[in-house]
Structure formats: C-alpha cells, structure tokens
Image 1 (spheres, rainbow, N blue to C red):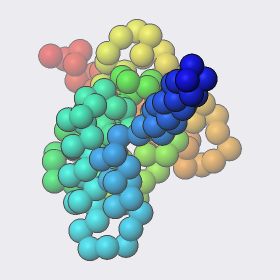
Image 2: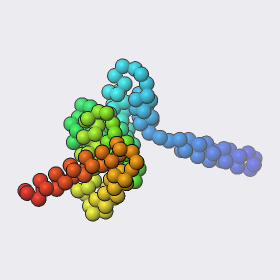
Image 3: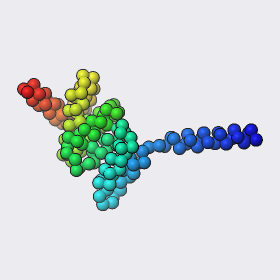
Image 4: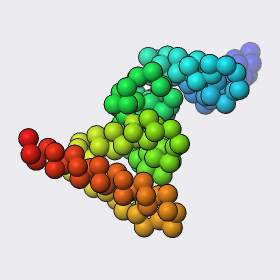
Length: 168
C-alpha cells in the first residue's frame, strides 16, 4: 500500500515536470505556425495570435518582437515600440537580432521599425547606449557589406536625431 502510494506520487511529479517543460505560450506557437503556413491572410492571423500571447504574458519578448515585425496595420513607431519591448525583456538576444537580421529585411517598414527600436535603445540609458554602439561597431567591422551599410545608416540616423534634439 505504501509502495503504490509512493509510485503514484512519483508518477504525478514526473507528469507535472513533463507538462511544465514545454510550456511555450500556445498563442505564440500558433502565431508562428501561421507565419510558416502558405494560407491566405496568414500574417494577419499570426498577428492576432501574437496579440493574444502578449495579453497572456505581457513580458514575452518573442511575442513583442514578432508583433512588431509582422503587424503592418500599426504605425512604424508602434512596431518599433514592440521591438524595443523585446529588447527590454531580452536585451542581448534582441539587440543582435535587430542589428544583424531585422535591418536586412526587404520591407522598408520593418527596417524603419528596427531603426525606431534602436533609437529608443540608444536614448534609454548610458549602458543601453554603450551596448547599442558595441553591436553597431561589430556590424561596421563585419565582412558582410550589408551589415556595414545598415550600421552606417543607423549611426547616421542617430546622429540626425541627436543634432535635432540639441537644436530644440
């Protein structure tokens, strides 16, 4: 009797551990499935799921980033704000993604949203400014001309923002 009770408890513990391990937000997972599908209105449906994922988990960095990346119906600065929130919740991962992946996108509004996020990062604090400059320097020194071009564009825009702020 005692042995069967211990076995039942051990089984329950293993079951809870198993269920807890793969607990990615279901709406985030479904949104990512929509993005990968080739169905009509896939990105719109994915965006709906990313919004639900953020409602469930407001600090989910990946959901914020993907919403900023795919939601074409909101203004660029709102998209940039979501990308910036992704950075806030996972700075190292999303700063690198912004600099080395998002700026390369063919869609101008995605690149503009990444620029907006990088401007927000740069303006946040001295430590964030240093972190951003370190990634941009890494891009400038890259062997890939696209990285160098993107970093120069961002640095020029940051300079314009700074000079405009100094005039005001």
